[in-house]
Length: 245
Length: 215
Image (cartoon, rainbow over the protein chains, first blue to last red):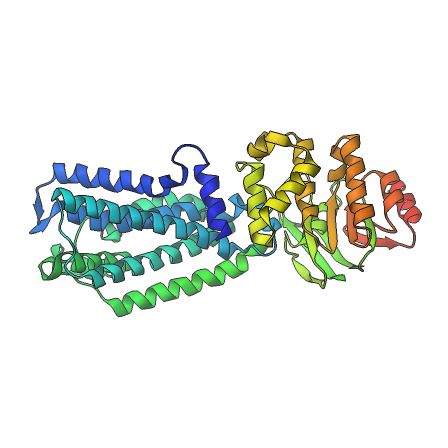
């Protein structure tokens, strides 16, 4: 907890609205993209309302990209923390991800409420599936961050690759398409991605049966658990690789 | 006690690796005042960081059966973009100290006044040393690790440091890295010389200083 407060102070300082930026930043993003896309594209895409499609797609993608971005060289940037033996790399990355994930979820909730109030969106039909999808996505983001934080300390190539990776990953995020819209061979490939499964889950909750969602919760659980275990394994070993000034 | 068992530390360099510490063994008992001397780059700071747990050894281990401070040095331990007060709050949280009491002590000792609310990166090295020193001794460790840092303060600060460390906390152990031989002679009861990646523990402080001058 102390790390979370410290991270907030470090990133947002004590000036003006300070820590509210944690929510404010993603709100501006999510709301901006939602409004822009809703104006550029037809109101219905494959029978689904555009604003809600953008919201349910862009929020998981933003969560993932923020976690990934904050995890690169997270340990080196926090070298000063290594002076305290009780602070471990796992604590550092957990604090960072916690902040990003909570910030994005709160932003999404605010945009959803605003969307419903102005009449651009409707409440989800099945809240349970929405929660499940968001939870799985949060775990997936945490897993990616664990892996990337360690890998970026091991190799510079991994660090450089992040920018390209996060760009190339957009089609595999499920953010702007639904599996059902695509041809069968692409469908199978996309469903390898945990993020696609999670977005489909959220949309199934949001729109109900009209979304024609495809997802495999068992596969999603397995792959996410595997990534977390691999990430934890690396995180436990990364300590000796961190150079402190 | 602190036991350092067969410590080895390698750093990756441009081609291959460089061995900074080669099978270093060292024991520090409660109340002992150990001075470590050696040329620049001999690995003194590395050794003290490993003892403090900031860096991990390539091989060997450190067994700590008393509480050991973080290495008090010119850099590190603080987040530069945070104010002195935010750093203080963080230290209080992770070490379970009472904030207002610690704040009073640090205010009184470091004499930084309103500077304390400014980011640490705007501090001079002397001010940083004061804050670091005040924060370190506000936590009651059994053993303090000090890497040169006391020497950057002014005369008055130096006297206060000596008072806090060697009079009020005379029963604590201390590992001190310094190039100031008269200071080592004055405050240490044992000393060791670090050269060619190995540590030689000398029978008396005078022997260590003698050896240092012949390096």
